Length: 209
Image (tube, rainbow, N blue to C red; front, top):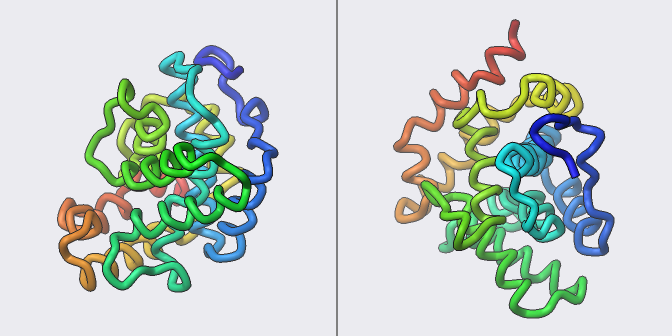
């Protein structure tokens, strides 16, 4: 397992289970290249934080499936009229993992992890996978804890999964969610300065140098 002293992209192998493969295929089919790279980076960042914090008891298949599907609710075919996009994505994960034969409790866990990625913080003692996904997505979207992972690892991930137009695409998608569903987390995210955080993201600055 990758540790803080030897964290390399090549050591992070995506699970090859039925659910993991299906989650990747679904994300690839419905996400733009920029959003697909975002969800893939989010899993890598989550795994990176796990290594840096010596956390080894997480369920990587669960984390991977949740990471790949955590934003599926912002794409039009899965956009829900009333539910938040993270709740909609959680239900997509339930459907996918049901087909993969996951027991009900684990299917619910996938939904919970996706919903909690939009929490302001997640207690790792309560939900380790939710904590890791929140940390990974926060890094990729707002730049939170951008200095906590080794620069060599960050560079490898960004080279393989470049940011492309994610700053503009994600801002537009979440802003549309907030406008139509102002009582959901999307509104809080927009109000917290999403657009400027994404445009001034340290990884965006590095990309333009």
